[in-house]
Image 1 (tube, helix red, strand yellow):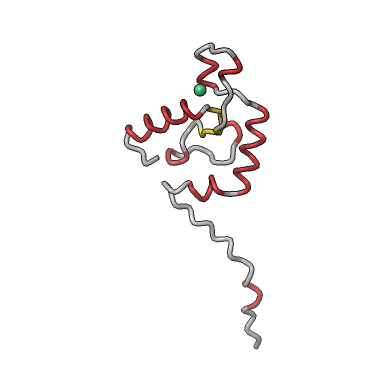
Image 2 (image 1 turned 60 degrees about the vertical axis):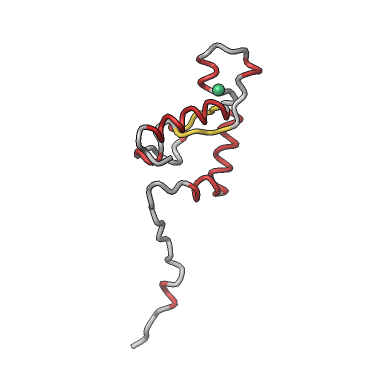
Length: 103
Ligand SMILES: [Zn+2]
């Protein structure tokens, strides 16, 4: 009878899914990649566009989750991403944390 403990060595795919902790997501290479592609496809802040600003004032630098991850939004689904400038991103996240969500 052999004990095959080496066999299960590489099966450590235990993703801990802690809500409220998105730092791992935003620090990951995968997010960095998706973020860069998103910014190429949609370089303008959607909120600035709604304000009808001239395009050169609408350049965004943040990829935001339309439905926040903490509220069940899809992390990697491009349809849940939008471009925001830092100003509108701050406005949105402060609004969200005031509503009681944690970031
Ligand atoms: Zn903006």
